[in-house]
Image (cartoon, rainbow, N blue to C red; front, side):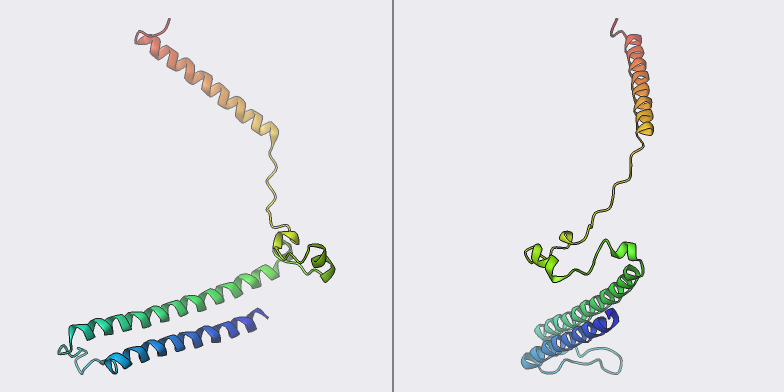
Length: 162
């Protein structure tokens, strides 16, 4: 199902990209005529006005941006399909993100579709080893007392304190 939806979304993105690029090209052509093409040596005709050169540069930049955005969107769809496949392959992980509910439960929740109403999305906290925490607290207190004793001795050594 995810692959079918991904294919549908990809077609939509590609159509939007093609439509946007077509619109950009039409906009440019309406004002400046067709874009220049590179000559035999790969160099553009430098006899055109600076305004046209700037407009062509902007035109090419907008097309490149549209292509880049579409490529990023297509890559995001592919990544999402992979992520969903992994999620659905692990039932324990899936239970943290989704479950099927019937209409009665939705009605009981006053048609509120917020995910936390139906799925526990929170990760459980790791249990604390109280004995270990107390040992660490004792060690920290001993280190503090030792540091305080050393500081007092150093201060006495330079003439402070009693």
